[in-house]
Amino acid sequence: MPISTSAQAAALWTALTLLVVMVLSLQVVRQRTKYKVLIGDDGVPELVRAVRAFGNATEYAGPGMAALIMLAVVQASPLAIHLFGSAFVIGRVAHAVGISQSAGSSIGRAGGTLLTWVGFLFAIVVLLFYAI
Image (cartoon, rainbow, N blue to C red; front, side):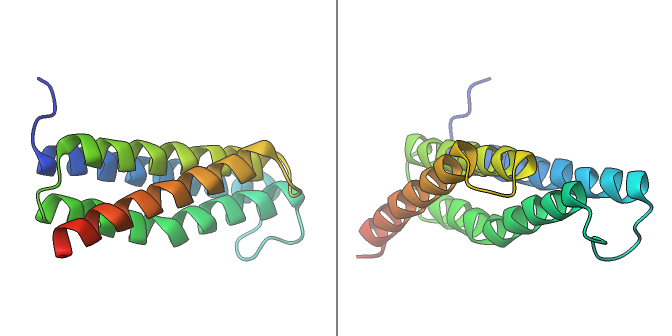
C-alpha cells in the first residue's frame, strides 16, 4: 500500500527518525558495555564519538519531527513531506556515520549537516507558504 496521505508520510519519516535515534542509543550502550564505563566517556575515543553521534541526532530529532508534524497538520503534499523526511533522515544517518568513524572533519559529517540544513530550509519555505 503506497503512502498516500500527509499524516502517513509524516508517520513514516518520524518512525525512521526514531529508529536512527534508537540505533545510535544502542551504539552508546554497546560502547559503554565494551569499555565498562557507566557514566561519561572516560576519554575512550569510540565512546566519545558514539555519545556525540547520539547527542547530535537527538538535538536535531525534535525539530525534525516537529517539522514533520506541522507539515502533516497543514496538509502539505505527501511529496513535500517525503522530500523533507528523506533529506532529514539521510542527512542524520550520514552525519552519524561520519562522526562515528572520525572525530575530525569527514564527508559524512559535512554532507549530513548540509542535507539536514537543506531539508530544514525546504520545510521552512513550505510551512511559511501554508502560514501566509
